[in-house]
Length: 491
Picture 1: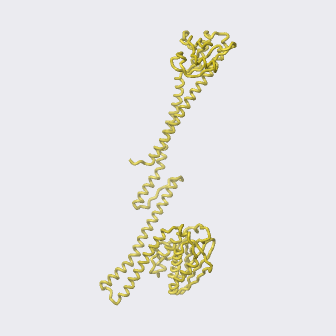
Picture 2: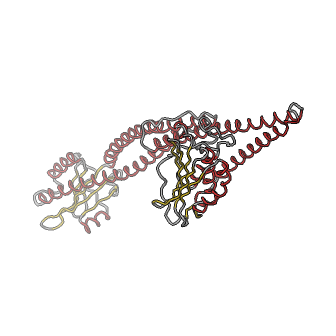
Picture 3: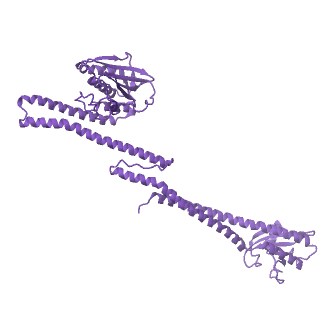
């Protein structure tokens, strides 16, 4: 049978409670027994002192064996519940609280050990039979009776151990009854509380099983709790949101990749079959071979982009931020590399780059790819004859790079999607036939690995991308707030 957590917790609580009450019971038993004995001893001592005072005051007038003393002892015994005997200085019992005139105690002698302790200390206390004076051991206390002429005799009081045990058993019985009631209530409340604590865990287990079957829509309730269980429920739901988002992105990624691969592969396959079976005339073969070559290159770019994504997603941020480089030099070299493409589009370049080096933290090759993708993207969508503006400046411990072009605006509803994989704004900037929609996604991924920001504005025919880099001589600062990224069409 599967052990459930609330049964285990209940068993643990029950065991702890049971052990606690057993230990408490043992302590209470020992303490209460000693308390009862001590209380009885103190009561016997008080009674003994009263008997001694009475006997001392009357010893000059009455004989210890006289009827008067026996009546007083009998009355005192009835009131106190103790058996009382009076012995002469030689230790021979002269009076007894028993009402029998021919009491068996009379004429008997006290043990020598008792007499020795009385003579030495003036009192005696112990559990004894007094050498056969009693049929069973009793609690006994003795006192010396003094008069004007010295020791007049001895007072001996004894109590039945059974009466003391009865008092102790009564108090122990009350304790046991209360302990059982408390334990029962504790077990019931513990079972209920543990079951309540286990309910969210059971719900999470069921939700996790649904996750394993591919259903990421399920969520758990926090039961209005602000404790660790409530925090766990919130964390579980956050994990569920992340898993659902990841699953949606995975499905979208597969769908996008399938779509992107299907089109060029269909084109290549169709034209290749046409060339092989003679459907395409010989004089048109060069034209269709050109198309096949173009689609093959497109497939190559797509595969290379996906490999770049895989590499970027496994990048180590700590290792990246240990490097540094001159970002102004990176921009100059990238502009030179894109010079022919910019000229082919009939564009001018307005570059505001400081002559002094601006050294920033990060991987030079990765940031070079960021700058390349942004400038290439701007050149691709800029109006012919317009000017590309590239600027670099420092502010507040950071370097800022902006890339601006003039052309059609990016639709407002597409700005939040611009950095997504395979997203292409083909409705307004559809002249891009070669891109695979990964350029700006790669830009965003690289900057995320560098813990930097990028955002975009597009209005009145001007589209501007700005991203940040941390200066190498500065301590790493927190990122600018949130995802301000909405972005432009990717490759």
